[in-house]
View (cartoon, rainbow, N blue to C red):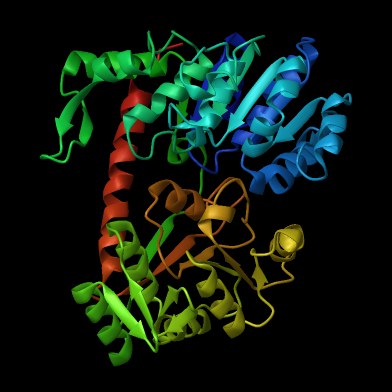
Length: 462
């Protein structure tokens, strides 16, 4: 398959040294990475390990490898007993695909396997500098970290050729660049450990008398430029609109008016932080729980210890009307909660539902190949790595707080291979937390876009 220009540029940079591929979703990062692996195989650099979310091992990595680079043999390290996984790891494949949990579980065996190439897909998973995933990956890059998990993931033989892939590398804070860039080039982009990095580029801001300290990115222009230049030396940044000629995206809000019963329940909960359903009281024990319960109530239900308590069907009714307007076209319906998925599935008999792990592959294939008109999924489990260019419509039954998941899920249909205009509908309950989340996501999107554009403008001229 012929590569796009941005993929050829990334491949050339990757041949010169370790690299972060910060390409927008839909720009073909998996194919580019497979070509990088193919190049290293030709150089005799040993087998490649791909670490990625479990949800994309089969539909993205295994499927794309067999389709685009069939000369590369590939195996999944997921499934079966630990003994079976170790047996596969010891076999002679070109590419081994592992999820993050498998990486931690088989760390000693993986470290001893003698991999020549290590690719981390959806690298924002290692955004927390002290997490076990980050420690394990940095150990494979030869980075020694202090702390309790240091003994569990000791640095040893370094995997020499390392790459990270992400369309949203730092969705929450620029601090999230440190683990990813340190993995690619320890001491290259940012000298010193995480705390030296933080103290150089961030300013502490105490949060009142709570004892909590927030860290704001420096306003020092010189250090901002230094930060951007450090990332740019080891990053290849691509915006989708500059890389491929894709159709436009249309975003439409659909206002949902809650029924009197739903409105009463929502308002009472927001006022009292408690709801009574028969003999059970549902309490908001923290701000996080309050937000989650409020989100559920906008969809006409609330989880409790005794089960699911229903308050109405206004969003479901709006979904039914909207799908009738869309007509016979295929549609992805994104839901945040399992109950939303099950209720939508009842309305849409025969829809493909990404809920049962055992039936996951069949549901994806049924939708991709047109046997199912609707796909019901959660962005947490299906927002990464999957390609649905057979479809150009998506409905957000409810919204996630995560800009990363929101963007990733939207890009499942807006990517290389899409030829139709992509339309997204957002079911927003009027005068509720839905409106707050929607606006917050727009603000996060603006922030992330500005950061990546700034990094892109700072890239070293070749």
